[in-house]
Image (cartoon, rainbow, N blue to C red; front, side, top):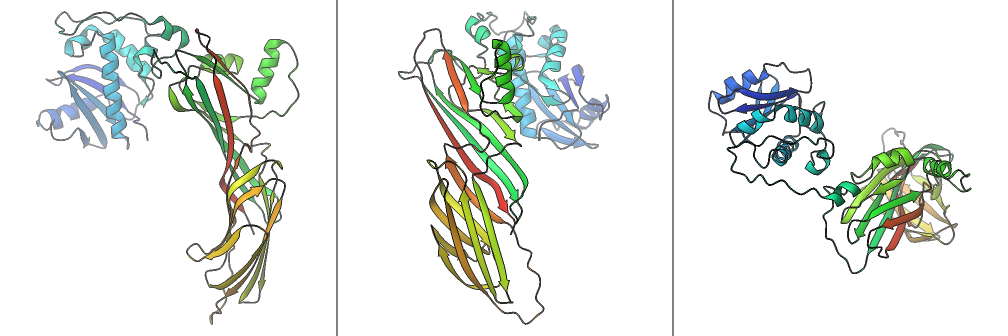
Length: 438
């Protein structure tokens, strides 16, 4: 849970309010009086940095001769709150020439108010990167003449301001071989009825990248999403090429993505961090390609026997294959004995989960496999209770296949030195909650 701060106060050692900002109306403006009376005047400041008074929590930290107090009226992440304070102080120091004390606050009221509006919105922390904020808030802080810190103004980094590569990538990176690894990983969720109709289906995916690139490269990623293709065709004044397009829902990006360019051009442009990171997340609710179809048949023969037949069909391409396929067929708790016949893989009864577990190491595409099982049940003297059949569950992963149909159309790299890059793209689809009622 985020901080959800109701207010933030800056006090001197006497308890006088230097500056404050109210983010919510669920606390009164006089809450600082409770902090001053119950904590500062009782000299309990050093015992615990978190105190509860009258239904509100006070999270406070002393920096130099200033107390920073965050007031929250509900449960909050204390570690996140203190991290916010530490990063906020580092931000203030970058504007004030390295000093943060009572004099620095008194000399920079207007600037501090402007920064407090940017770094917290309705009590939730926002971007606290000095490099990014200085692109928008260009006002310089007033340095105290009594500050012992050096007041040398840092030289602006033109490369960082032009490329936007701030906060997540350092300069001077050099690699002998410039490579990019891009993985599209999807989890397909399904709930299917016993008659084969789809009750619920969606795909959650993420694009993972691992970059080993020299310098400050600018990357552009093209996908076969509907909006992006239509925007590209509009900009080029020509109709888009035929082919499958998909609609991405609930898209979230890594902070390196240029959102301005995405909103205007619908292209994913970014300066990547060095190493491994998650570029974006998305969800698909329409046009899902199911990798498997399961056709179960369960017959209860009296009170002590059952016959189970399960047919699994792979729907993906014949040149592909699935790995680690597991089919879990639930059986009653009073199962005593089982016997199996399978066309592929191995099956056994797992009493700890009350299921028949059918494992297939490698499942080729456009094929089918069947399992037949006879189950003997322990006869009970009491009245038979109806067995509520839990759904069949599947586990699998299919390399080089996406249930959403998402594909990488291009991945371009621009860097001033003009070096060549090697791009590697992989796809994999895994089972999320893949269930079939029986």
